Length: 107
Image 1 (cartoon, rainbow, N blue to C red):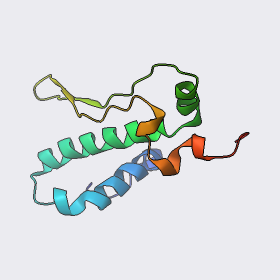
Image 2 (cartoon, rainbow, N blue to C red):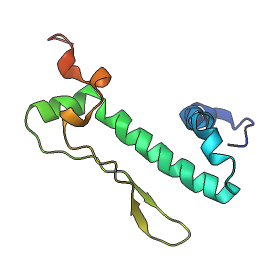
Image 3 (spheres, rainbow, N blue to C red):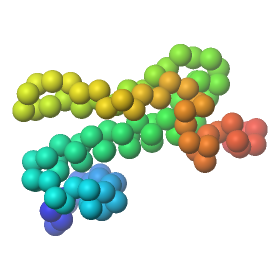
């Protein structure tokens, strides 16, 4: 969030920096520690969505497998797990743009 270079880890941080830039206006009024906590939550939600957009998971749902992806964060300050209420349990919950059932057979 502070910018700068971190070496090879910059490749991993790119998507986090994009999230921060996207949510900057809602974060910048918070103290740094709260910004970091909120960014962790936003990153977990983004990763839940990213995972559910994969063909592997979507095909498993099409086969009738009962799979749920949950978004939780662990608070280092209090040792508590926080449910972010972003669980996805089926293909119908994935944004239409990313659903494989809208693609032609063989993709």
